[in-house]
Image (cartoon, rainbow, N blue to C red; front, side):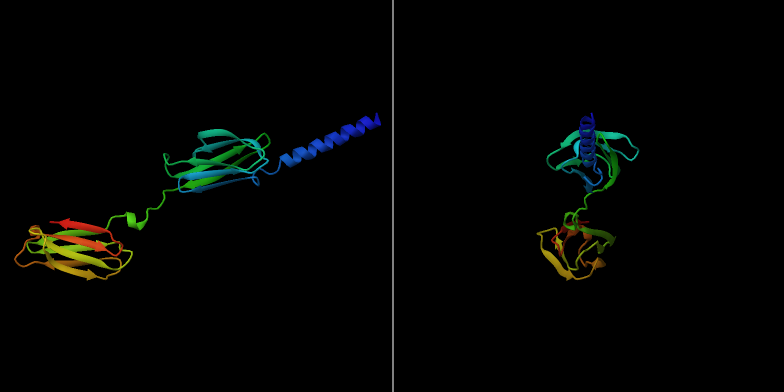
Length: 195
């Protein structure tokens, strides 16, 4: 009987040490990161079966799925491009634990080259036009003033003003309706202005 009791105690200790090993801190065996509107959930080898849920900031469940991370690491990607930017919760649940991660999604910034050149023209009087160029990353703007008849260049100048500039152009013998501006900045963005 004593031998049977010893085997039972040894078996109990062995299973409890295995349970303790499989019950490692879920926070240490998982990771969640967000980049722009994409979320990646990492479950390390040994987590076993887990449920991953994406919740909005009010706790409403938006998506849930089961995954197995028994013999290898698993990365579960989520694309939230159809959802608004903001705070989301990632809930990971196993038989032993449940943890939450908070993530914030945001729009990917648009490179400056993708923005149009911000150049504006305003007719001041019958012979004067005001040109405004703003939001320059680098100084250097080429301004060509052309005649609408024959596309002949009337004036061309380079302006090396940082960030932007405003300038009045006066035309003798021409009205603003007879000319147009071709503006090109140092990054190659261009704009044509008609009056």
